[in-house]
Image (cartoon, rainbow, N blue to C red; front, side, top):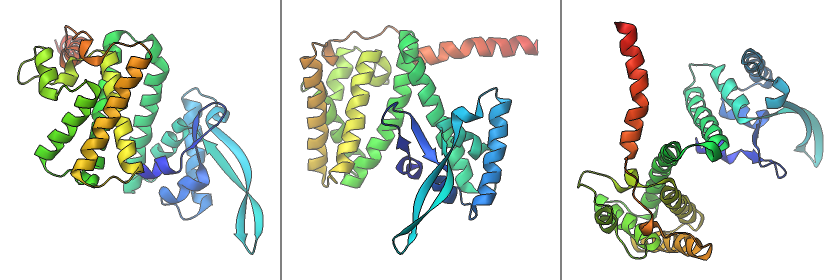
Length: 276
């Protein structure tokens, strides 16, 4: 999935993400452009059937490419939105493993953007669910980056995580935060944070992952120091803008798990009604 990120483009004016069909073609394992165009045409049909404008998601362009000996020629290409890429993956050859990967990647990315667009209007519990989901995903990526840096054993990773919390929470460890929130031993602190506190931790996680990879950090001690410094920097930023320190934010009455369970109840009730 990282490959799809590597060929992603972002419009400097609108900030919209897009992909070029010519660059997607080899990743989707289509040797010939004409065969890939056939898949794109089917994706366009799906777009029409969804009630959307094809021109909003598939933009025909021409561009110059080098062909050797300092010469270039013009070729046709298509700029694709995230949704267009998803439709192409949906219409691709299902026997190819990469197609399943692409379907998952672009479906998740599309849903993430939908949440981002809706976020300002979401009620607090919906915000908590959205950010907690993102944090779970990024914590997995952070763990991978830490592993690459040399944080291998579970105990070492626990120490690594504590350093991030200590930086963000003014020296408090995960255990200290757990105690301040009056949680039971089995309860996770991330499930008992409001959206503001979760957002601070999401920023800590994403920025630490980026720095570990960007600076090619190696060694447990260096990884721990990086996590602590990023956490401390996030705390400093909160202080500079006059925000409330994360340890002073209120603990919500309901956990993430409770909210998720309650949101499933109506659907379960409907299903039970249908069975009776």
